[in-house]
Length: 529
Image 1 (cartoon, rainbow, N blue to C red):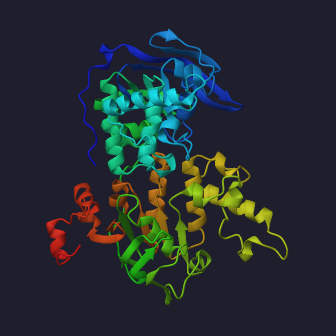
Image 2 (image 1 turned 60 degrees about the vertical axis):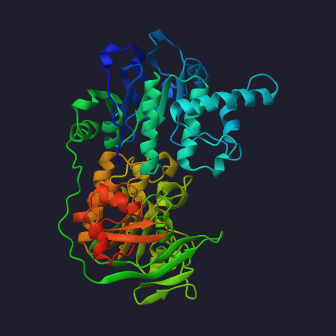
Image 3 (image 1 turned 45 degrees about the horizontal axis):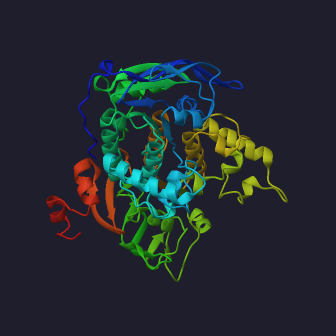
């Protein structure tokens, strides 16, 4: 994916848009921000990076007025401001686009933008004025959005543009974006960075919070690193690299490329033949997919989100029933006449790490120990004659937390209170602990910080070396190329090509993802796509 490359004016030549002096914040015994000092030049893109729990979101919420610092000063355009709430922050030109969008699904784009910013008692004049202003902003900042469409009918990328428009409509000159690319396709990410360039060209200052070092290096002018609540380093982006930033974030050297020996695949553990799935609207989401997963290999699945990868995982996990075609596993054939369910697939030694950990991987209100047995709670080891075995479940959760470095190590803590990376490690630990022969992994490191990514990648490779068959779906091409032994590419529900991972590069995979098969692969496949 080609990121934006922008010419950079020296930051020292610009006035300061935002300055933090000694910002400190505690939540009980947790010291979330420790004497934070930061100066951000106007009209620049400034990256803030750090592991989950480093204090980034707390700091941004202080700047936006959600939290009040225990001590310290915030200066906007050189003037100290007391930000008691987000309304005050907005009045001083600070806007924020949260990781989880703050939009009303059954309102139109226009209604969402003016919500809370209506003028007078009559709505019609406000809507007319907003429409004119939004059309101007959309043209100026490349933020085209259908103003009369309902939010629920828009893609995630378009919803994010609505959030940016909301902030600009309210006069934002300092724009905070928290993990803005976590749910975007590569194409949407690229367009977002073009928007950043347009915003900066008009003098908007952008604070970009992300764990993706590639994006930081491509999109920002300067970057600051947080670790354990403290600001530990500031760098001019053009004078640093992934390795230095990763070490500053984690406090030790980090292996950015997964190390693995050559694969030695053996028996076919699972195969599909012309697997097809038609959804309730009559749309074919999977179209005659035929693949094999062998013991001792990682099969990567690349493709822009929405091209059948999710349905492939769901079919193999027993969550949906094939409309046509079949799945063969452990001597059993699964098809429309002989369906399976998730429990059947678990009995056939298939583990499933879902793409969306919050929607399918755990229940936020459950404790960690409850989430650690979710889907496996009926197994004899967790149950006595009448009731479950609470002490045993707690003990087993403690063991998993120790083995997988889940923090904090508290089995009683509600699942929603763990960071995304620790939630992910808990889910992976649960599935791996069942000793499956086949592991279906969806987006293993989405929203996960760099230290946890290194840990998860290492464990996935260890499973492959133990002879497990692994199907890995990820929108991160670097991740697919690093972990997979061979890569299949999906487009519009079809498998359009397959390539040995050692021969894959981002350009080749990108062409295949767009259903353009390179000449050498077309020759290998008899010209068939």
